[in-house]
Length: 427
Image (cartoon, rainbow, N blue to C red; front, side, top):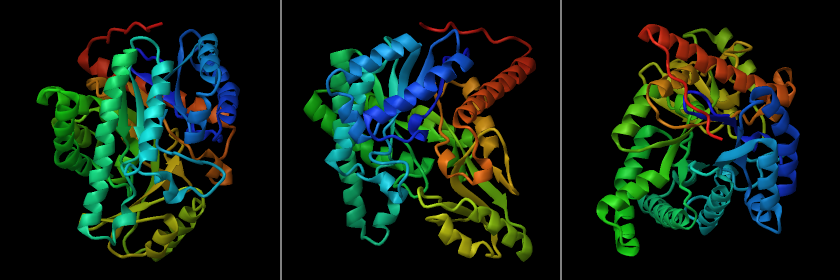
């Protein structure tokens, strides 16, 4: 939905199972019209569309895409962002580190992403830009035991493919007039997982290689090539992921902006966290029992531990981390588990909800992006006592975001002693 702050707000449909286009469309028909009636009865309602590789191929067969476009028009729906991170199955199977396969060293990842861009260009309303979130190049633990030459090869091949992607997006813009940006999504154990690594990648790999190739092969000037790279390759700021890196939103945004790196999309998501009381073995044991309720076999649930010397220690999954919860110098745990946004308490654990509140405040002070997407994809694997009706849960999350934006907007207007002018919703 379009907000008077100038943002488009939706939720990511990767929360719904379905790897074929038939299954995806069925889920959209089941949930989207009802949510639109409840949340945006008088204005168009946006969709954060997730298509697997298989579904992205199938929607281009026959009249599927045209039929989908007609359905969107009839229902008052529109697609402005897509999730191109998970390539294959994302539900009802062990995903774990397979979510990074194929990575950006492969032709498969490039071909899939270009296909998504062409689909999005067909679906985007006139005059609107679109974004597609993607993997953070690869999965870091795959290369920890390799020598530097292997890691450099991964960066080099990933960069070649991303620069080729920029060239494809430039051509797509010429053909369709639609501007699409691909948004790299840093996450725990990704080859890129925090603002420092993202900035280093841009400065040491993406921009130098991109300038060379785009000037030589596309005939662009140096300034045109730089602008093309920074415009078409942006960052997906997943609030949960940056909280796991213990990065404060204002500081992360400032560093990325200073480096000239744009935020293509903000994914609103929350991680689990807890303080670890010093020399309290009993309490830590109880916390371990609570964390264990969130152990499941579908997704990776990395734990990032803050030690009393300010250093971070990272565990690849919750089951490994639980063996170390009694470490005497550990003072805080944060776990990669996208929990519902609308509460901070989970049976003695807390969430990083305050980071979302801070992000929603910051984006009203400075237009960092226009794309906001709730991404709580773990409804099926939550502990039983937290599982609720899915449609009601999605609605509750979006209503919480709307209420939080309104509260922060009112507080800002009150402190400024003036009212914010309202934007006109485009039709």
